[in-house]
Length: 325
Image (cartoon, rainbow, N blue to C red; front, top):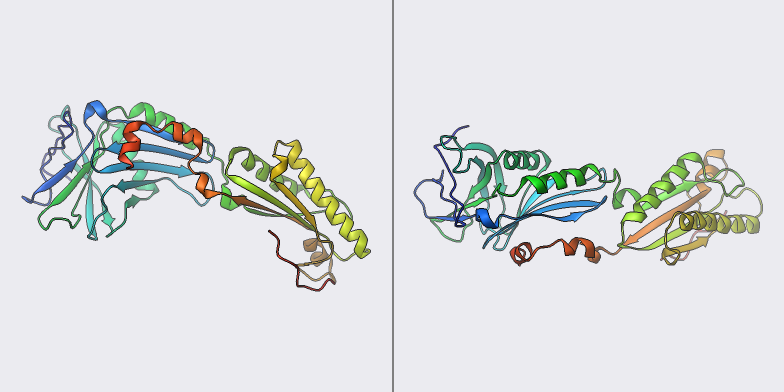
């Protein structure tokens, strides 16, 4: 969809655009060309974050995280959130050095009373693509603070390309699994052995790989259990041996010893009947639980990447109650 010609003049930090809402008073926000900063504020195999400060308005934040449950999204973190829910228009507006080019509608976006505005994966990539092409994605909406006032907030494509390359490289290096994917792992053992089955060993290696990258993990609990095959005391000792074996493996792979807590429970807390081979297989297990201190986000390394301009714009196992079999 094409609209009347919209061009930007951002040399002094003001977006001059004919509003699609008509003649109402418009409040316009955009970073001036000389102060248009795109900063990769977090870059690790766990999270990638690209930020763009918008003076007097807030920050546009593009975020992607490791794991199957995450996808790229963009959030407009506003210093003053809207007081009115409604429809907003996201336009691709050409810069002044592209005379004759027309602005085009990218999407209609929902704005919610009291919330930052967020868009999903597909539209986020479209916004990045428009910026890469030198255009300025601009959001038009009413925020409810003034009866006749409209908001126009633009992302300035100046100085964008280098940061985009860094961001795309970071996204390509994200782990395919995140904290939610490895927070609880159930590992199974071969009969009468402290040797993990192949799939369980692969799972444990995945957990260890994640631990190498997440400094916010404060505790790793390793709880081992057995089936009821054999003597109860022997099974108790075997479960402790299994827990210790997992701990030793993790230490060998570089996990810090002081994070690891082990316990063996023998035949207690079975999860299936011990009367069948399938049930006994389920009971021969080690459960690895990770505990994360979310207050440590972002990491100190990521904090160092925050520029003053961006920073300013952001003005234990329970007692067993089950009877052993």
